[in-house]
Structure formats: C-alpha cells, structure tokens
Image (cartoon, rainbow, N blue to C red; front, side, top):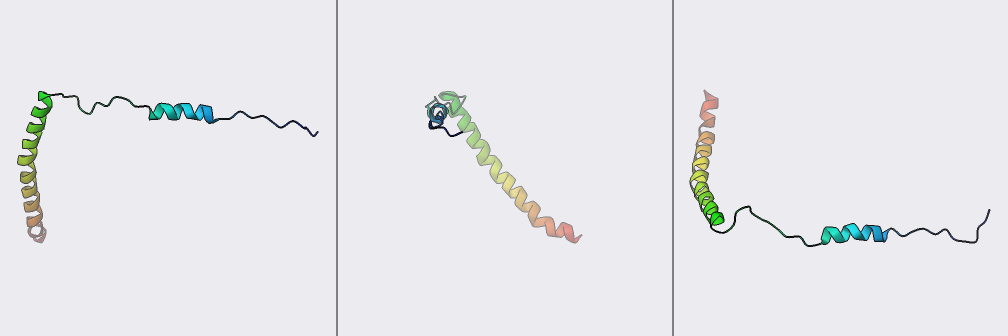
Amino acid sequence: MNSTHPIRTRSAWPWLALPAALALAPTPAHASFLHGEALDTMAEVLSWIVIVLVPVVGIVAFWLVHILPEKIAH
C-alpha cells in the first residue's frame, strides 16, 4: 500500500508560541506592602534592630565558642 500523498501534520509552534508570549508579557511589580512614610519607618526600625542585635548575638556566640574547650575539659 504505497501512497503518493505525503502525510500532513500540523505544526506545534503556534501552540507553543502563545504560552511563551504570555510568560514573557510584562506585569506590574509590587515589591513591598508598605508605601511612602510607612516604608521609611519600617526600614529605620529594622536597621536599628540589626545595629543593636547583630553585635550582641556575635559577642555571645564568640563567648560560647571561646569557653567551649574549658567545658569539654571538665
């Protein structure tokens, strides 16, 4: 059974192009739930917490590691 007509297949690229175009379409970005003065206030509070808390935690961690050999020796 030899046929002289080639088998016609549909191209898949139109179906692949639509999701790709939708994925690359620009959308509005919302980086923060705070705006304006509230964002500035939250950033200032967070910076003070980091400035105070990070050195305290670092000193405590250094002290605990420093006395660890003495505790192991006992």
